Length: 248
Length: 304
Image 1 (cartoon, chains in turn purple, blue):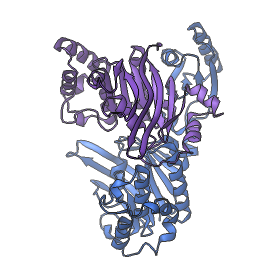
Image 2 (cartoon, helix red, strand yellow):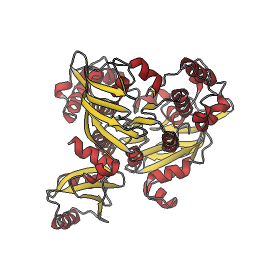
Image 3 (cartoon, rainbow over the protein chains, first blue to last red):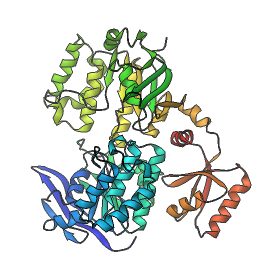
């Protein structure tokens, strides 16, 4: 982790009519940091994340992602980030190799570079036997590890992970975090949402969104201290139970 | 006779290629709150669909409320409430229309059983004219529960009702289940969240279609075969790596603020030696303490 800022937002806001989904959110994320983005259902996490990925235009406020402006340089943003979620990750009716080739192509990787990365990826995940199998036939845990590896194949500055470990078994969930740590060590910034409060502990810093606002931003240790809590679960409960919104 | 009984149930897909449910037997007592705990793909949904008579098993027998799932499926359908993992109400009917529909199908009225759903329904009543498809996740979940309860079932099947729901809403949902249990309803609930296991009276831990353990959460924790320790230092990521490579450490898994470890021989000298080793590897602020296992520790242990 360094002090180089890779995500910088200033009063970033998204309105849908009278409804303010994200309300003047301001924060910075550093290069190589594991940044946890928490909040109750309907707090505004998805809205914020869509803006940061260049998929949704803010109503007001400013932000730069990997050095690019969130209004005028969204195509550059997309080239410099990776994204995976529990819902959308890979094409189930393509094989492992075909998925890697497809996403490598989308990100404009050279054939030579792609071949190198592909071999390394298959080796790291020990998927030699599965390389020619359809992704749809793999167990969920394998799919999610593969989806993460594909999301960082083009060595993006930042990777956005939207509940990447939902429903995954406890051993695979921990192997997944090994991959996150390795990516972070190599300088990739991790921006992650999760409902597992033990995973919140693995983040360098955490934000908590409540009703569209950022209600807290600090290290897990400092947050627990601030709320006189022994676990992140208690911190979450303290902050989220005052929420008015019960939306999704 | 217990309300739910499974004997050697087997279910395969793709002509036997995938064994979703592998010789599963357990029973749920009258009025019990029983949890089926396991990750995606463990076989939970197949078991639910078999018990609610929506899917036939390859082999084995089962009864629900004393009725056979194959021969007496019609009787079972009148006696059970089922909330599938995927939202399955009519998206283009309103909240009230959905509830009314399910009441009518079961030849009853909202009024007749209102006392059973009142606590839950009052929370969504302000939106009773809204189409179900336009509700938030939390409200959909509450409506689905109301619809599953409206005919006053004897046995309630809830398939991952809290998946993707934040911890505050999850706590509220489990409070609702406790109140339903007090009304005498037998509840079989599944969840991938290990921390919810302790809220059930008995649980079955399930993985790859096989039951690994069935007991009360307290007894499952007691059966953990090793002495378990929690450890932390100023460099948690490096600590994980160093612990995995330490000759005294048998198992090591990250558990939030601490890593959980067991020792090769469970001896006092090993823990002292480990701390010495870690000092030599330049770890600072080391804390090592003996702890009680959680259900997740037990699950991981049984998986290996």
